[in-house]
Amino acid sequence: MANKGHALSRDELIRILTAYSGWTTTNGAADGSTLIDNKLIGRNQFVPNKTILIGSGDARDETQRATVFDDTTGEITVDPPFNAQIVAGTLFRIINLPTGSSLAAILDTVLAIFNLVNAMLILEETGGVVTTTGPGTEDVVYINDDPAGVFKPKVVKINFTNQTAAEIVVVRTHYRNEAGGGFIKDDEVAFAGVQDPLLKNVTLQPNRFGVNVTIERTAGVAKAYKWEVFTES
Image (cartoon, rainbow, N blue to C red; front, side, top):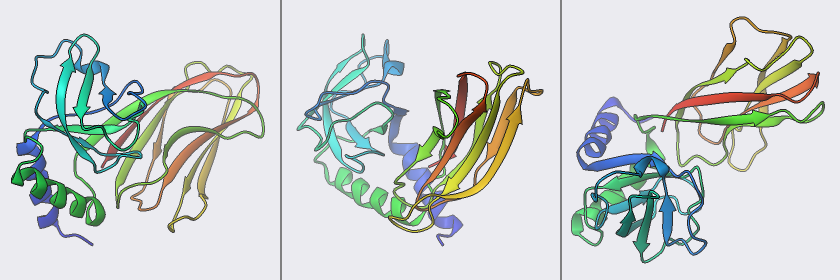
């Protein structure tokens, strides 16, 4: 287990060098040459010539130089392209270093080590909407299928505002505890009818190989549930 000194050193490194951290909101170009985050719309031209570090997905841990930034769409163009398409929901960072510098090479090495040995102590948030499809189907609320290393999902918050007296849903948590293994159910809770309070918190545990939270409707009709997740990763 990494000690507190590792965590503090990594946190300081990120604090100093990260200009921006976010999640892509739209699929980038199929050839890996662009990534899009609509939260960057209207931002100034701080992106070009910075290093783009991919934190999840098929291009995880790759770095490339940002060459063009479109502040009307939040699209960043990199050259050369990443080795995979940067799809929506990909974690990325804009690093205050020009790619190709010796410091950038050092950063890549340090980050790769910390991804393997220590949870990254930066609180992240994302969310969405899941619509139940019916009895016998576990619809995925949140999943981290292939974490880079040990990480700390904190809590999934599910909004039951749309549920009526007719609906019964079962929320389940699953963990994978070996590389390449299947997800194993850890807990489940059934929610019948109108809820009070409307917001339900699903507490999650530290994990290495994968975690997911699902919802299954066993009675009633399809309803949409807004969700939000907080992780230290």
